[in-house]
Amino acid sequence: MQIAPHPALAHIVKHYLVLDGSFAQTRIYRLFADGNTGLVFNLSSSLFSTASGNAGNELCWLYGQVGSWHDLQLNGQINWLIAVLQPYGAHHLWNLPASELKDQFVPAELVLGKSAGIIAETLLQQKTVQQRIDLLDQFFLRQSGNQFQPDQLVKEAIHQISLSEGTISVHTLQQQLKVNERTLERRFKNQTGISPKHYSGIVRVNASAKKLQRKQRAGNLTQLAYESNYCDQAHFIRDFKKFTGITPQQYQQSAEALALNFFRI
Image 1 (cartoon, helix red, strand yellow):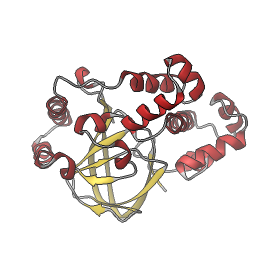
Image 2 (cartoon, rainbow, N blue to C red; image 1 turned 60 degrees about the vertical axis):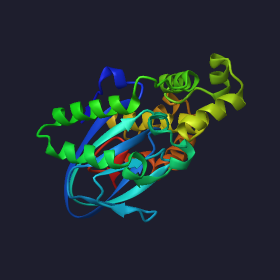
Image 3 (cartoon, rainbow, N blue to C red; image 1 turned 45 degrees about the horizontal axis):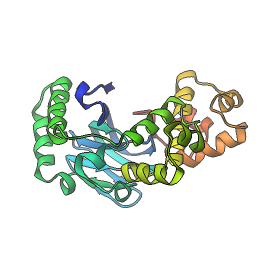
Image 4 (cartoon, one colour; image 1 turned 90 degrees about the horizontal axis):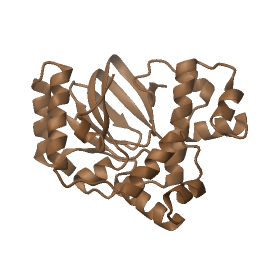
């Protein structure tokens, strides 16, 4: 379930995501890149571990840009509340080097200090989802203060890439923004941790995944490839697999999806 943040937070928080599930045995779920960073509140007794060896049952953890995908081993009752941040959200909120956070899952206390544990404990005491959302809104309003202003060049680049569903070329993007390639790349990577081209690829694959999930286009991948501005079906399949680790056909057959980019394998 997706929930919109307070309007004053739209430039920082993309949306809140509520994930629920119960696993008697350990299951592997794949998280592939969606171009955003996030703050995850673990409101249950669930345990998770990643392929890199990170594991734990922290109440709150932070993740950076996902380069391609990560497999998470989940066990127990899943009750997660995720603040999905804008691509540059973590960098601006906590002045983090965006590139250093890429492909990292870290206990939030390492970045936020004691406030991470305090907000997580307070969330546990709330009885309804809306009470928790209201609490998070107030938390992020305090964190952002009144001086926050995202880099307008990066913000507009992200907007144009999203409008095109990731099909806009970097050259066209430069022309629209009236900026040279080096400046665009430097500022975009500084804010998000990845390049405009990489981000476009992520957006493109996510748009394709949404169409696959919504329309269940079994056997019609060629049409979807052309709609997504790929030159042919083979190119589409290679690109999809590069970011998700599986083919579009396998994605359509995946079961127990908790989110568009988070499903059981």
